[in-house]
Every structure is written in structure tokens, then in C-alpha cells.
Image (cartoon, rainbow, N blue to C red):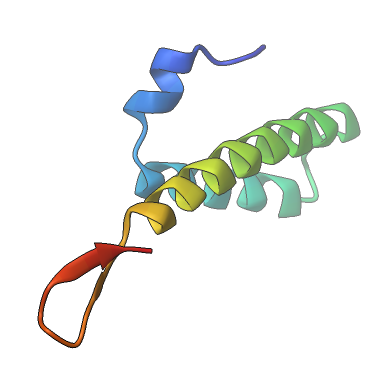
Length: 74
């Protein structure tokens, strides 16, 4: 079940990390059935892919202060 782009955009980076944490906890639970573990793993990989792209975007928008006190993107 793929998420819509709107839902991905609405979720903050912090919320995505929280979702990944919950998925990891469920994967570590010995009572989680194997098929459910595979589904959770795939869901986690999709979240990581989305998160990686979003973090790259944020990183590119960060500003660096020049010696003269002005800022530039890097």
C-alpha cells in the first residue's frame, strides 16, 4: 500500500524518524509474524528512501556564513 505524495509531504522529518522507530520496535518483537516483518521492512525502506531525499534537500538549503558576515547556500 503506497502512500500518497500529499501524506509524505505532510509528515515532518521528525515524524518520519518516529515512524521508523516504531517499525524497528515491531520488527524486534519476537511475536511479529514473518510475513508482517517483511511488510514492515518494506515500509521502513520506503520511509528511509523518502527521508534520505528530504534530508538531501534540507542539506542543500543550509546556509554558510562567509568571512564578511553574509550568507550563502552550500
